Each structure stands twice: as structure tokens, then as C-alpha cells.
Image (cartoon, rainbow, N blue to C red; front, side, top):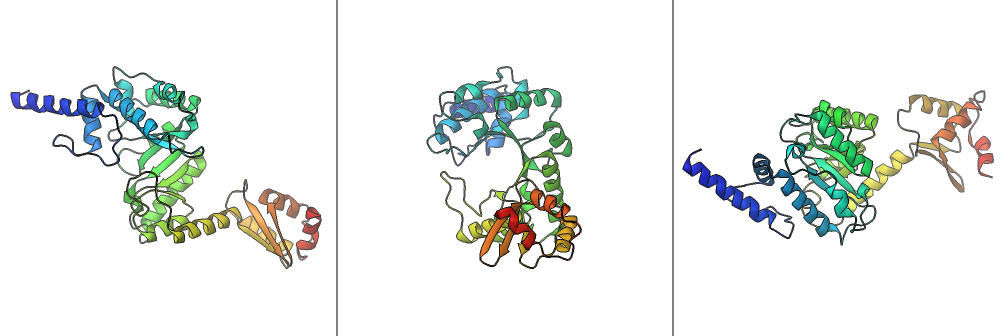
Length: 319
């Protein structure tokens, strides 16, 4: 290493040390001459065997900063770099120790796997995630659909959330190819029991199309730039979300003239879920709700009455 390279490395180490002496969390990353982005900062920490120290420090700051604002059902998402397990100073369990005196529960913390290079040791990293899950923490994979966020990574790590990369989200309302790919990831997420999050939403068209696709978790400049607490959603988006959620929760509408044959036809064609989904029964002067699982049992027990209307037989269930 030349003298100039040694000086540059020493200066970079000094900048890294200054970041690790900060007692506040930056919402907007302060660009320096040595690290133009957080990615470069963490990569340098990895190269100098200080990755765990930096992740530990930023995680503690994040928890301390958000603690006065985080409500019971809200979550804090913190980065987790796979290479941290190879850091000489790595100690598993420190996050659980930090939470002990905060009042936060482990299920309010989501470890977001930020992957800028291939995971070299899936077995060791999977064991670490299993350790976190046993403690109650959640796991998400970032940038799914780009870079090293491959199908192998999803199948090996079995995340609780999949964050779809913005490259698939930008102009999704205009390109069918992107819609097909996101639909495929939705199908994978459904089979794995993983929630889907769309990253990089920047237009109303993208947001509305994602809602129509059944994706309700999103982030991007369309909603707000990085800040806390976040501003409220636009009224038009809130209304669209409520309509779509109701549509998904109540996929079946039963009216006064609905027949058993129509119900049988609907059940045979329906491809959605049954748990926590309901039929909305709307007849004159009355509205009722019935779980879809009960609708199926009800229809099966009246299989010979195809031409008859349903409501006279359903009425007895609500008296």
C-alpha cells in the first residue's frame, strides 16, 4: 500500500470513528468526502473489521430515538448485514439486551437484511436468524427482485416480509411485465406466509395500482421523504385502501334473490382465502356477515336446492 493510500485509509478510519462517536441518529445521511452513502460507510466498516461495532451503535441510536414515539402495534425496522457474523467482535443477543429496559417487545423489531454481496455462509446466517426468531424478532429481505436477493435467499431464510425492489415498482401501472413479476412474488409470499412491501412508490398511479393488486404496505417519496413522525396519508389514498380492504375481506355478496346455484358457481370459481374472509348478506332492512367457511358448509348441506333462493334458509342462522 502506497503512502497516499495509507493516508486515505487513515482518514477514512477517522471519519468512521467520528460517526461511531455520534450520539444522535441522522434522518438524512451527512455526505463526506470519504463516504458518499451509508452503503460505502458500512462496506468500509466491514473491510476494517468494525462492522458489528457500527451496526450495534446505529441500532442502539435507532431504538433510543424512536422509543418516545413508537406505539404498541408499530414496528422499528433495523438493518442487518449478513457479513456481520464474520466480524471478530460479533456478539449475538445484544439487541434483546437493549430492549429489556425500553418496554418494547421483540416482535416490534424487524431485522431488514441488506444484501450488497452474495451470502457466503447460508448455514451460519440461517442459524443466526433462527436465534432471533426464537427471541420473537421478525425478519425481512430488502430489494427483492434485484441484485443478490435471489429465490435461493428467500427459500433459505424464510422471511416474514419481502420488500420488492423499486426497479419492479417504478411505472408498474404502465408495464404488464412488472405486474406479472410482482404477482409471482405475491404468490411466493402467500405460500411462505410472508407479507409483501413495495419500495420506491413515487406516483399516485403506482400507489393505486398496487392497492388494486392487493398490496397495502408501501414506502416511497409519494408518501413522504424520510422523517418522523410520518405525515398522514392523502385522503384519496386512505379511501381507496379502505375500499380495497373491504373488497378483499368481503369477497362474496349475497342478496335477497341469490340462489344456491349461484353460490355453488361462485365457490367453484373463487381462488382467494377463506380464513378471516366473509360474505356480506344484504337483504331489505337487514345486513349480516357470515364467514366464508360457514357459507361453504351451509351450501354443502343444501346441495339439492339449486334453484331456490338462499336467504329464506340463511335467515334461521341469525335468529
